[in-house]
Length: 324
Image (cartoon, one colour):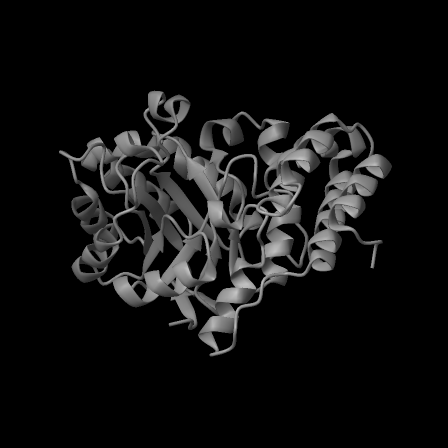
């Protein structure tokens, strides 16, 4: 089930992918995912409109290093021409372009982007056609099952995308109205796999390596895209690879958690400075402590700490270890 995956001209060593997540999948997290075996990682979702305006903050989302390849870039927007122009601007930064047609967040949907596009098949056709003409890079889309339970348009959208030259489709099997509530209906991924000749990538409720293996087995999908399951747990990829090889999946030791958390903190500090890094890292460092005894007290201390040295002391104390 863990196997190589080809998307267009891009050959991946395995079928484990880190999803694009706003405010989450910046360079340090992508490097951690790669270290643990993810074959493809995505930037945060990028606004096509922001790219055209040449916004510095938008281009900051594309910050990378040679070790951060192959790199997927996910764009969102509702104007085919703007998306095509945005692709031309950024294609040199990555190895694959994905168009977001599934984001349920109100700000995105109100702009006509994300999952709002699931109600407009002809606009989807125009967007994929324009994007395909704009680049030779592999082109994919990420969708939900539809706008609501009464509008399951995902199969129609998939057929349109395939006809316009898309190279793969990722499905998060919830509709927009569900947001992240209810259980993701993995049977929809199997439906998509059976209706198209394109590689099908499954997403949704992948919180453990066993979830990854179960999705691959139950749906027959060609690959998986892990989102919330990676939060505080980049080891989900290495553990899935271990299961795929018939080995046991062993959770990280306290010393491994500590070393990873400190590396993450120092890497982000080197990129954006200590003050900004600590502000952004509070959520990540809290996730690293999740599920362990004393996590609530650790989170409280993490959220009140203002400098790197004190943060390191808190982490060392929590894990009851010195730095390796």
